[in-house]
Amino acid sequence: MSNTNTDSDQLDQEAIIQQTERWIKSFIIHYNICPFAEKVVTEKKIEYKVIPDSDVATCLEALIDEIIRLDSSTEIETVLLIFPKIAAEFDDYLEFLDIANQLIEDQGLDDDFQIASFHPGYCFHGEAKNDAANFTNRSPWPMLHIIRQSSIEKALQFYKNPELIPEHNIKLTRDLGYELLSQLREQCMRPE
Image (cartoon, rainbow, N blue to C red; front, top):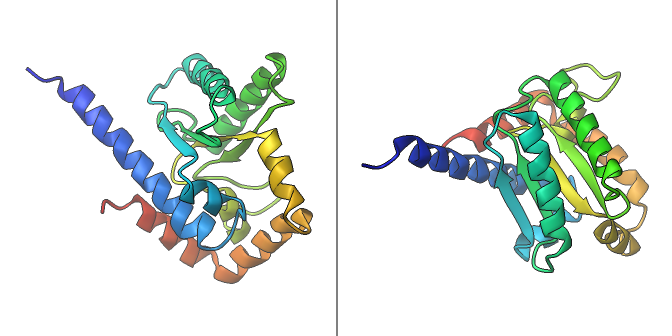
C-alpha cells in the first residue's frame, strides 16, 4: 500500500519548485530584477529546496545544513530554500528572518554567506502594501536565498554601478504597476 501523504507531499514540493522557477524566469530574469540571476539559472547552478516543515527550529537546522552543503559544493552556486508551511504572515517571516540571520552570525558563517529575503506579502519598511516596488521581493512562497559572499564580490567586479540596481527595480516595478505584477505572480502559481 502506498503512502498517499508522502506522494502528495512530493507532488506538492515539485509544484512549489515549478512555481518558483516560473517566477524566477518570468519576473526576476525577464525584467532583469537581479542582473546576476540569468547566468546561474542558465548554468544550472541554482538549487531549489522545499523545507516542508512547520517547526521553526527544524527549518533553521535545514538552513544551516544547506549552507554547510553549499560551502562544500563547487557544482551549486546558490540555494533557494522555500518554506511553504511557516511564516505565512509577513511579520512572522521577518521574525524568522531575524533569527536566521542571527543564527548564521552565531555560527560564524556570515563572512561567507548572506541571505536575501522573499515573501508573498513582502513590504518594504515605510512603504504602502500596495506599492508595486514591493514586488521586487514578493515571491510565490516564503523563502530564503542563500548567497555566497564571494559570488557577490566576483559578480560586482563586472557590473557597473551595482548600487543603482534597487533604484532601477523600484522605478521599473512602479512603471509596470501593481495590477500587472499581481497577475504575473498569480500566473506563476497556476498549474501548467
